[in-house]
Image (cartoon, rainbow, N blue to C red; front, side, top):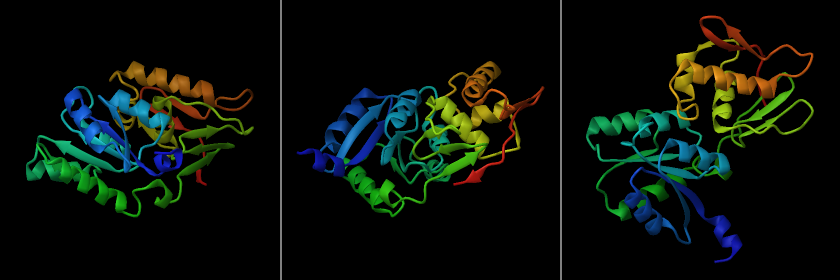
Length: 239
């Protein structure tokens, strides 16, 4: 298979804490149609997505740490998600679809059905990046933040590297400019990248993001609202 053929393959990301499941799905799905990566949980998934946005995430629900439902809610439609779960009751399926999954497949399943469902999702017009809706870009105070490209450009045109947690935190602020966001709200909006469910984790993450955003002689872009939380002091335009 040459490089051009590999480039045509859809990129799948398998997220499951069971190494046997990851290995079996990787071996079954890898081929001329798909390239396959795997992650054992939310942290590894965040790193994989930061490296390259997949075309589809195959996501287990029952995992230690952040559950698949929480991950799916956090991904918020930026990539199609096919949930696989041992919880196969109607209520479980409904919950999975309501938190943003494109499809839900109960375990145990026939791998051929998984393959058919993956193909069906990828055939949907908005599933592949080249057919997706217009990129989500935000301009504020001279900055350009591209959600899809996961990039941040400063007012001088230079790129600023963001960790996965900083990306999620900045996205929470630019999508809610002028609103006071409590620490609990920020934890919920960025759950996974911030890792620790403590107020101190939010404070440290905001501090790191501020250091990248603040410019000499300019007012801060993120305000501390004492005893409540934080607020982005910017006007945001969709670019």
